[in-house]
Image 1 (cartoon, rainbow, N blue to C red):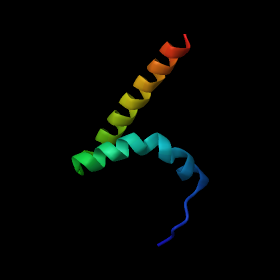
Image 2 (image 1 turned 30 degrees about the horizontal axis):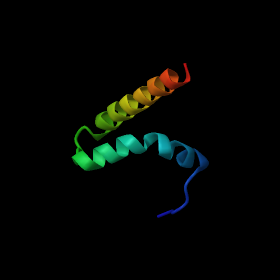
Image 3 (image 1 turned 45 degrees about the vertical axis):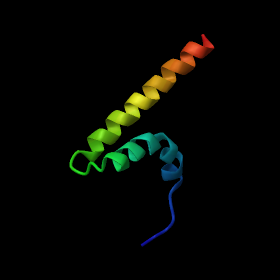
Image 4 (image 1 turned 90 degrees about the vertical axis):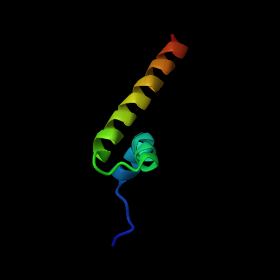
Length: 56
């Protein structure tokens, strides 16, 4: 088993972290990818709206 990571994995990791944390907390394996995708989109959409609201 390799312990090396690619540059793209290192860059993507912080962006995928909210979904991974939620999926691990729920223990959802059956629909894990769907939960991960929905949580990531919700977190980053809300964060984007808050940043635009603060800047504007």
